[in-house]
Image 1 (spheres, one colour):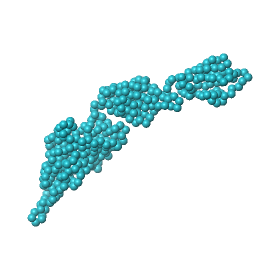
Image 2 (cartoon, rainbow, N blue to C red; image 1 turned 135 degrees about the vertical axis):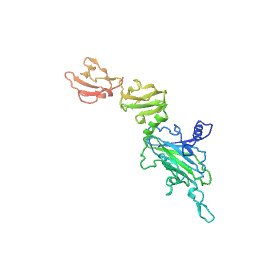
Image 3 (cartoon, rainbow, N blue to C red; image 1 turned 120 degrees about the vertical axis):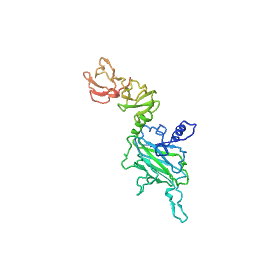
Length: 391
C-alpha cells in the first residue's frame, strides 16, 4: 500500500496557497454559514502507482477561519471511484463543552450539552440545517423540508476522527461513481467562544479498486496525459521505456503508464536467453511498427503496442567430419553429401529446423557410430539445427 501526504497552506507565496485562499474565501451558501468544497486536483487526488493493489491517499488542509457562536460549517468532499472508506481528522482546543449554566438555586438553565460544538460526517447530502431541535409541540421548527438538527450530531471530547464514507447501511462497499460526502459542524450559541481548528484538517481515502480509481484520475484529473499499454505475444523478452514507466515481461509488471500528451518515447525490447541461442524481437504491432529491438513513438493519443519475441533467425551451420573415408553421409533436407567422392560436408540450415543424417557404408564396411552433436549409434539420426554450431 502506498501513502501520500500533502500539506496545503494559505501562504500567498505559493501557488497552492493561493488556490486554498480563494477556496476559504468563498461566501456562505444556502443555510450553511461557512460552506467549503475541497479542491479536486492532482495534488489532492494523486494517481496510484501502476501495479498497486490497494492505495491510501492522505491530504491536509489548513483552515484558519473560526466558526462563531451560532454559526454552521460544512465541508463538501469528493469521494472518487474505487474508494471503500474515507475519513476526516483534526485537532482543536475548542472541542470541550463548557459547564452547565445554573441559577442561584443550582437549577440548570443551559445544559453542558448545549455549550459545545457538535458535528458529524455523512456520505450523502444531509440537507439544510435547522438550529432548533423538533419537539412534540413543534415537530417542524423550521417548516417543511428535510433538515439536519443539532440532535443529529455528536460532540467530540478529544481528537476528531469521523467516517465520511460509508455512513449509510445501503452505501456500496466500493464507490463506482464519483459522489460527495459531507462533514458538518455547529458551534452552539451558548458556547464560550468561537470554534477553530488547531491542526490541519486531514482527509484520507482508502482505495480498494485501484484500476477504477486510476481510470477516473486519467479521465477527470489528468486529462493532458495519454496511456501507453504494452502487450507481449510471447513472454520471451522484456519491454522497457525511456522515459521510464514501462518494464513489462519476464517478471516486470509495469505494462501500462501515463505520459504527457505529445511526449516522445523510446521502447526497447530485450530478448530472453534460451539454452542454445536465444530469442529476438520479431516485430512490433498495434500502434507501434518496426522490426528492430528499439522503436520511437509519439504519445499523441492512448496507444497499445504489441511486442513479439521469437527464436533468432540466423542460420546454423552443420558440418560433417568423417573419421574414416569408408562411407557417405547425406542429409534431408539436402545440403550434405560428404565422403567417398562427396565434398558437401558443410551446409547452413534455418534455426530450429530439423535435419536427418543418413550414413551409408562403403562395400565391405559397416556404420559404427556418430560423434560430436550427433553422438550415438542410431542411423539415420535426426537433430535440430538449434543445437548446431553457430555461423
